[in-house]
Image 1 (cartoon, rainbow, N blue to C red):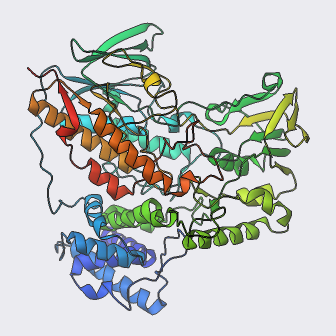
Image 2: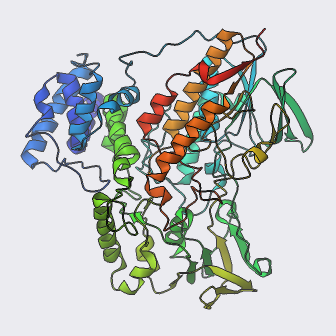
Length: 636
């Protein structure tokens, strides 16, 4: 009896501090009472990206909702079925609109249903998956994309192997171990749909993310399908056998070669560090390294540290080390927008963690709210208004309002260092670069022992660093927070296609293109997860589109097998038409703004790294493969 009483107290405690807009969704599905979706219970619009836990409702109304929700949840846990087990897609849109106090597009119902694990109103036409004997798939990379590929292939019954250059799972999260490294998307969204986790924080740091990836991979047995310490260097397609020859250096340091019927690239985009060419850099006598190559055991106590760059990694590193070092000098040739981060380092209260575990519907709806907030809510606001009178600073009226709110926030954070305002506030519109979350950056640059150089590092003369503005600075440690070669897709591999063409030449180096970010003409049965124009610029978790890609691939291969073909190759005209649409969509968005540069673009200015699509649009594109988009090879 004591155990049940404690469990009941824990549930009551969780509901007592739970998110009101999420509770309302649970309450409606459990009771079927539509009054919970209307005034006076409907939440008011939140501020910024806040969870809006109170719904901005009067305390008496909140108390009424919590009491009713607790009773409904207890009845459900005791065996009462959901009154509305499968809301229609239209109902789901209305529910999320109420929960967010926002206008959710009518077409969004399908992806909400998918996210809640509900069957589609109109099921896609699938063909039975009959995998031919001996058909093998090789996955290159064991990070987020590789784990998604492995789980998808395993569930479908494929013979597959994962080849990974590192010694463990994790990809980006394996390599990046710098202080402060963490997610800018909530954990409950930045996680696999097939792998729940008891997150202790709302936004986790690197070690916890890596533990999640590693434990998920091992729980699904992917360690038994993965060869670590194995670097793939070359892929070459053999038309005579419809196979890929894969070669590189194995864990024993010896060359290896093997064959596969299909190859999935899961190498990601944040893989190859970008090291700038700075005169004299080699002359620096102290520790000098890229953030992705942070030395183990490095002690910065009392040392003079210089940081090049002020992107995501630098914005995380500098506040994390500021209390240890004697001085920090930051060379910031460009500026970044950063939004308030109310849940930075905030723990998930134990009663809420218990509520997530005991009431999956609550966690599912909480995740759906995060998906709208971080994935797609801002998408309409980053479209260019051609009649807007101030295009140099904003795109439209809403974007201008965002700018003013962010400027006010920065002024508050800088305190008595308003002299830094012009040096840290961008001239370009908000969201032209991926919006960062402020983990203390503005307060840190305002500290006495921190020097911000609003220019590039021009040259290095021993321990003296000389800025483009002529200023001179002494340093003991030099940290390169200069990002990655994100536009150079598959740059670590030499890939040769069906007619002997090299992919690097087809792409002219950094001008990568693929159909649905997944398939490339002339390269049969080669598929790219998180390929060109799949990454996210407007925010959110990239895990969902990668999972959508993997579902598409399994459906495509099933249709290929059903046709009797040995390989598929996307038709050039289909590929080209898709990329025309991508480019045209980007030209109407903030990412193409002429007033800035970003890692989304290649050397020609074309946006190659991120998608212009809303999540639900891309999900529908990937929901079912169309074999008529492809040439069938090796039939009969």
